[in-house]
Image (cartoon, rainbow, N blue to C red; front, top):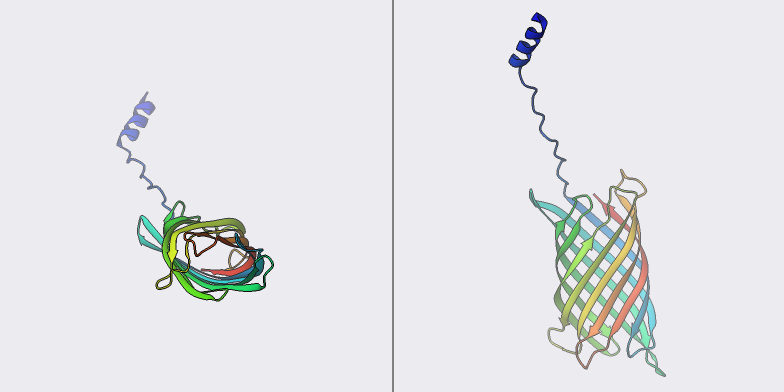
Amino acid sequence: MLAALTFLLAAATASPAPVVPAQTPPPEPNHVTLDIQGGPLVTSGNAWIGGNGTMTQLGARYEFQATPKARFANTLQWQRLASHYAFAGGPRWNFDYDQFDDEFDVELGRPDLPTGVGVGYFSYNPVYDFNETYALHGFGIGVDRWANYYMPRSYYYSAWYYPSLRGATLDYGKYAVLRLDVGVNFRPNLVGPWNLRVGFMSDTWFARNANASDSGFNGPYVGVSFWH
């Protein structure tokens, strides 16, 4: 009986166990991604027989934490498409252009595997088409799912739509443009910064006036990226 009373008294006067706060994961650091990629290109259009060419692209992206709950990404890309096409019964013509786009995303989901939703500015400048030279500019919206660089292999994709691209001074062509990109990222060494990627890109131009024609530029690519 005395032992039981002693135990109850000790329990009543004992200090409560300290409360251990829940462990919060450390914030995701800012990241820089640089990439270069290229591959063959198939060129098509509703007024063409078709053709082929090449695509080369350089890109840079900066992901940063603006506030504890707001993370953003800004992506800059330069792309060179050099192709040719032919009309039925006619000679072969060149169709080449340089493109530049700036995509600003709000990141959603897990910081290590983010999805970005944002707005972008796109510029085709210049475009060499047959015997015409012109430029196209405009704004659009899109979604990005970037690779998970903490895994040896992961998938990524992006889809951007520009509803009205037109020239600043020459309205030779007015287009809506859909840009798609999907691929697999390989990270041979999880400690190192280098990655290999294999993917497929597609630029589809939808004509919006009588002077233009629908066009498509599609093809596989391989690339190398640096992520830090």
